[in-house]
Image (tube, rainbow, N blue to C red):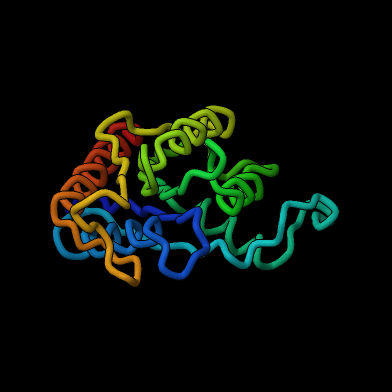
Amino acid sequence: MAAKVIKVVAISGSLRKASFNSGLVRSAVELSRESIDGIEIEHVDISELPLLNTDLEVNGTYPPVIEAFRRKIAEADAFLFASPENNYSVAAPLKNAIDWASRPPNVWAGKTAAVVSSGGGFGGGRSQYHLRQIGVFVDLHFINKPELFVAAFLPPQKFDENGNLIDLEIREKLKQVLLSLQAFTLRLQK
C-alpha cells in the first residue's frame, strides 16, 4: 500500500516580489519535490484577495476569487505559513486570507500547520507567536518544533537578490520543519 501523500498549502504573508518569506515557500516546494516523499506543497498566492468585507458575501456565497481560495484551503491536509513581521504582528495580507477562510464554514478547522519567518532582528518571531494565537481561534494545530526564524540581514547572506534561499543550513532547517509537519499531520489524521 502506498504511503499517504500530505497535501500542504503554503502561503506567504508578503506580497513583495523578492520577498524572503516567499523565498522560504519556494524552497519548501523544491524540498518537497526533491527530497521528501509523501508531501506535496502548493504555493497559493493571496495577492488577489480583496480586503475582508462581509458585504461581498451574498446568500452564503463569496466572490469567485474567494471561493477558489477557500476551496484550496478546504482540500488541504496542512498549511505552511511564511510571515514577515509588521508592527509585532502578522502581515495584513496573511491576516486577510485567514479571515476570509475562517468565515462560515471555517475551512481551517482541525488541520495542522507550521510557520516560518524571515526578517530583521528576531527573524519575524513575534509574527509567528501572534499567528499561533490566531490559530487557536480558527482551530489550527501548529507543530511546536522545530522553530525557524531567519535573521535575514545578518551575515552570512541567506537570500539572493531575487529572494531565493541560498543558505544550505537554513534550507536543512526548513526541511526539518516540513518533516515535523508531515509526521504531525499523519498522527492527527489517524
